Every structure is written in structure tokens, then in C-alpha cells.
Length: 320
Ligand code: NAD
Ligand code: UDP
Ligand code: UDP
Image (tube, rainbow, N blue to C red):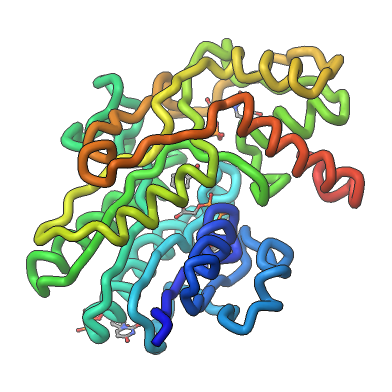
């Protein structure tokens, strides 16, 4: 019998790559999405595969299906999207977690939560190991996402303790690649579209803040390994690429790789924007024997090709 895997948020950026990967492993995939930020286009190819099923559903409502494993990705991930309806963002994280945990409990299924580096907030420990408790604003504009994700983690660890549920928790750091939403407002998609269309590159603040960017294929490999990992008691595991660069350097790399004439344009730094972010991936290396393999230039080239093709098809779809 093929294993049946539920992927919530499967029509989104990371979810669509995860569904593709699971189908390659000969799994049956049930993709559940309300299309808030994801789209049918991201999984259009997969719909041809009889092992793939797509269900429009909002995870804040209960879900009764029969599966062997659950990856819970449903949640808008970019600041402009998660801040558009902040109450819904918290509901998605918290009520979505409760429903997926309830479902997993009934089925005794393993359930993986995609948490985030945002649980560390604007960190004062660098790089961030999993035992760092973070510096998160409770009331700021990012809190709906950060606190929602923190509460979801709390629920996962309580279901593990209280109901002996087999859980896995990945803390994902900035990830990029094909199928990113063109109007996501994320730095990689914004800069690539701006560079390809000759628009000014919008640098927020002085551009000296740092991030560490992981290519989506590497991230998906980490998620699959984490789900497969055998352990009695799960701990949160950081997944990300530890190569840290400033946003300014990222802009220069993308301009060079696109052979673009775009100029830099400085804009105000959004409130609570973290200054530094880099994962400590010691645990992922030791427990999952995982490390990112795709370098930034290689990953950016693949992402640029994706947006180049998208622009050729539809100019108006990609204006940031
Ligand atoms: P995304 O916005 O492309 O995908 C999220 C998907 O969830 C979308 O398809 C969206 O329609 C769906 N969704 C949102 N609310 C829903 C709801 N209530 N019910 C059902 N579906 C819903 O984002 P992504 O970058 O693919 O992120 C996937 C997961 O990984 C998210 O949980 C995110 O928090 C986490 N994550 C992503 C990153 C990153 O850099 N991309 C970093 C850290 C964590
Ligand atoms: N749930 C679900 N699908 C299931 C089982 C449960 O969506 O197959 C939801 C249901 O809405 C419930 C929540 O998961 O409220 C938590 O379930 P649990 O059994 O932990 O607690 P309950 O609220 O039922 O006591
Ligand atoms: N950023 C920027 N220009 C943009 C979009 C983002 O300078 O057009 C900055 C943003 O202020 C942040 C970094 O790039 O410091 C990463 O932003 P993103 O929204 O991609 O991810 P997050 O802030 O959630 O890490």
C-alpha cells in the first residue's frame, strides 16, 4: 500500500515543491489549501498524476480525512501577506495546528509543523541555536505571525507530552526558489523582478541587515528527512542555509546575475525588521545528516530563470 500524505498549504511555494518530491517517492499526496497565497498553477502539473489530489479547504475548520502522515504548511509566510489579515494569520497558525493535531491524534499519524526562524524575533544571540528563546514583539505588526507560530509549537509539544503524539517541528529560515509568489514582497522575488524589468531595487533601511537564504530543494530535503527521523521525543530543528549576507550584497548579486541596469532606491525599514538572521544547523547536521548543497549564485540563477519565463508569459502578473 502506498503511504498517504497530507500536505496543508500544498499549493504554496514550499508546499508545491514538497508535493512534487513526495510524488517522486511514490506516495499518495492529498494537498489541502484555501488558495490565500497559493495557486492552482503551482500544482497544475501534479494534477495529471493520479496519486495527487487537491482539496480546497481552510485549516481553521476541522478536517476529517484518512492519511498516514501530515505536513502542516498552511499559513501565509511573507510579511505583506500575513499582515493583510493578521487575525486570520493567528487563527490559521493556532486553530490550524489544533485541527491538524486532532486529526493526527485520531489517526495516530506523524505530524510535522513548519515553524519559522521568526520565533527568534529580532535576535540578540547570533547565529540562532534551537535553545535560544527569542526576542519577539508581542504587539507589533509581525506578532500575528511570530506569536501564532510560537503558540503552534507549544501545542505541538503539548500534544507530544499529553497524548504521546509523534510530532516533528522544523524552524525554517528564509527560503527562495521557483514558485515564490511574484507579489509576495519578499526580498528575493522583489529584487529579481525589479532587476529583470529595469526598475529600481528597493532597499529597506541601509541594506546592512542580514539574512541567510536557503534554496527550496535543500529545504524540502531537510523536511523529508525530519519527517523520516526516528526518535522518542522530538525537539525543534532549524533548517536553513548558514551562509549569511547583507540585503545590500544580495541586491548587488542579483543585479550582476541579471546583467541589469537597475539602480538602488532606499526605502524606510519596516517596523520590527530583524537586523541579523543565521541558523545554527548543528542539530540538523548531526540528527538528519543534512546540510544545504545549493550555493546562492546557483539557486539565484534557477530562480531568475523561473521569473524570466513568468515575465515572458505575463508581464502584469509580476509587478511587485
Ligand atoms: P506560501 O504563502 O507560498 O504558502 C502557504 C500556503 O498556505 C498557501 O498555498 C496558502 O494559500 C495556504 N494557506 C494559508 N492559509 C491557509 C488556511 N487557513 N487554510 C489552508 N491553506 C492556507 O508560503 P511558503 O513560503 O510556501 O511557506 C510555507 C510554510 O513554511 C508556512 O507555514 C511558513 O510559515 C513556513 N515558512 C516559510 C519560510 C520561507 O522563507 N518561505 C520561512 C519560514 C517558515
Ligand atoms: N479534528 C479534526 N479532524 C479529526 C479529529 C479532530 O479536524 O479527524 C479537530 C477537531 O476540530 C478538534 C481538534 O481537531 O476540535 C482537536 O482535537 P482533539 O481530539 O485533540 O480535541 P477535542 O477538541 O476533540 O477534544
Ligand atoms: N527587503 C528589502 N527590500 C524589499 C523587500 C525586503 O530590503 O523589497 C528587506 C526586508 O526589510 C528584510 C529583508 O529584506 O530586512 C528580508 O525580507 P523578507 O520579507 O524577504 O523576509 P523576512 O523579513 O521575513 O526575513
